[in-house]
Image (cartoon, rainbow, N blue to C red; front, side, top):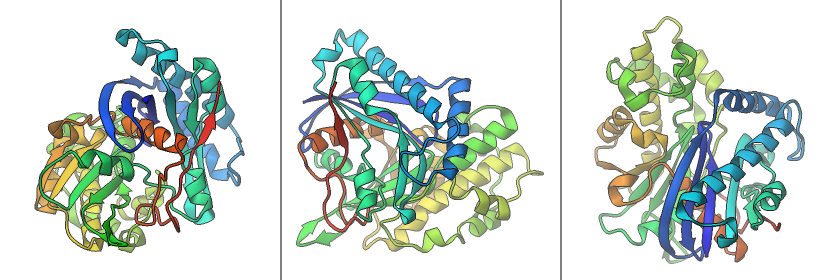
Amino acid sequence: MRVVGLMSGTSMDGIDAALIDTDGEAVWWLGPELTIPYDASTRALLEQAMADARGVNARTDRPGVLAQAERRITDLHAEAVRALLVPLRLEASDIDLIGFHGQTVLHRPDARLTVQIGEGARLASALGVPVVADFRAADVAAGGEGAPLVPVFHAALAAGLGGPRPLAVLNVGGVSNVTVIGGAMVDGAMAPIACDTGPGNALLDDFMMTRTGRPFDADGAAAARGTVDESAVAAVLEHPFFRQKPPKSLDRNAFRTHVAARLDLSGVRLEDGAATLTAVTAASIAAVVAHLPVPPRRWIVAGGGARNPTLLAMLEARLGVEVVTAAAVGWSGDALEAHAFGFLAARAARGLPLTFPTTTGVPYPLTGGVLFRP
């Protein structure tokens, strides 16, 4: 099955589109990819949408600018699919299916509420291709965390890799999440363990935007010149989330108030603030190891964080084992989650489970997603 996967992550930096050939069980080909960055006005609209979403009480609520943002990102995702296909000399009719994650604006599994804006029916109509969207709702409604969704894809990819086990596959977006493969037995079989680990790039990105007007610390350059305030890092890690065992998940802005109360960066040099927030990300990821049956012997890092050598160095220092990028093992570091949602769309179309008790805490293996036909 030829599928296009689409992802707009919690970093809100743009749309990743990627082609994948899969039946939802095996991955035969990780195809071309592209990223279309959001312009300043779209990013501002999404930030306002996230603020307006704090008042949402039902998945269908669209207060403030949410409806406007939903329509805009849907149309931009259609453009991303067309842009991906043109250089490949493919038409939309050559695609079997599209996996459309949408943009998460609210994630409160404790209230059985998760909201990803994006109109699956509009996208299917625009492209003339069936679309699977709304991947998280069924899991949350059944009592799961609704995140992370990608562990079943990570496990399929890792099946083709050699090397030591347990293996951790880490995605560092606005929020960080990890899949640990080969570390737990469930009903006599190896089952992946997964969870969100804490803030990924979100805190650092917001800090850089406020201080410099730039949306991230390019190549970790500012952090590399700074000094980490380890006492501040320790204070942030006092949050009860880090004492919870997997599965667990969180909203992009879950730590904003907590960090503001314990980490006053107003009078801190740019470089020192960047270094400390980068260390918060690394330390929060390393904190999950204490909750695992067996520590991972190797970590593979994808997402925006994989382009930050300062973060990678801090991770390796805190974990004490090999840390490599997804690109180093032949996977796409930038578009891995886009490939994942193509894979998940294929699984959903076949009624295969997307989430499991060890990945989201859902009571039983559960499929998900909603299929929209053109």
